[in-house]
Image 1 (cartoon, rainbow, N blue to C red):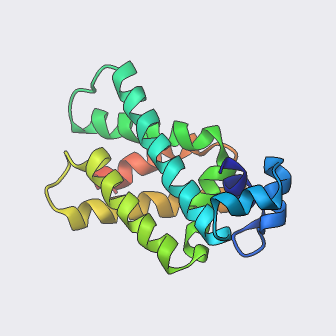
Image 2 (tube, rainbow, N blue to C red):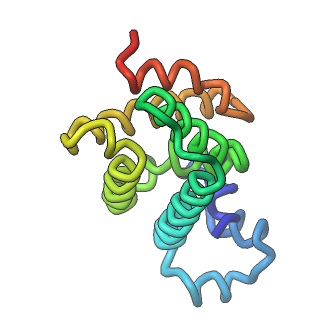
Image 3 (cartoon, rainbow, N blue to C red):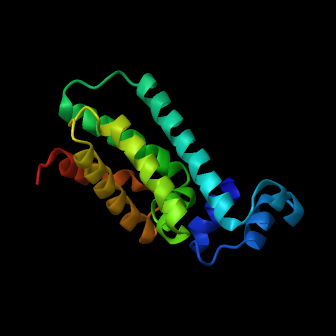
Length: 170
């Protein structure tokens, strides 16, 4: 499934096709279709799986680092963790932050579910208002997506600006 993410991240969702994915994955067309109905099905499965991995990695990073003291420090720590994980594979990050919109209504529905869970997990301590948490994660992902579209290989440099945004320090 990482092959799907990398193809979409490199080519864009509309240009990525099953032939590209199976070539990158080193599997046959028959094997692909034994697991997935079509490109959309593979993309959504990859999106779900890699987002679950992202949450696990973020949880592991949170355990490794002592809990930050105070809201400002906690925001910085959560954002740093998120940006570090995204920077490990910028093609996959681009696929799932930017290209998910091009994958159609089902992918956008899954994205919204994932973003809601992520917003609650990462920014739940900031506010009880779920709409505000959604707006925060939407803003963070918009700025990350713009950096990825400009070809950024490492989104960690966005940390100071994203921290100011999340804390409303503008």
